[in-house]
Image (tube, rainbow, N blue to C red; front, side, top):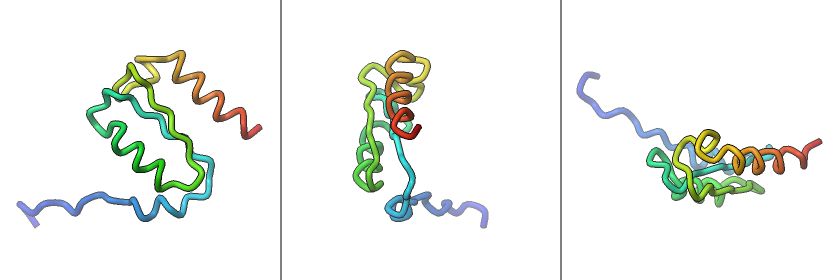
Length: 80
């Protein structure tokens, strides 16, 4: 209905059932989600890994490409 607030998008409970390797990469200066939500997801997702990019915002792959690539490559190398 017009003028109504949309239902909130909250899938935190569903995250508990993830059974795949999960890497969460977050930039300290990310104003969209930031490390608060990344840390929460990390706590919820079983066996997840968290990488925090200290000099990045939402675009870590552009703002810290070397560190971003290292983190992703290190994570991916475990699944060869």
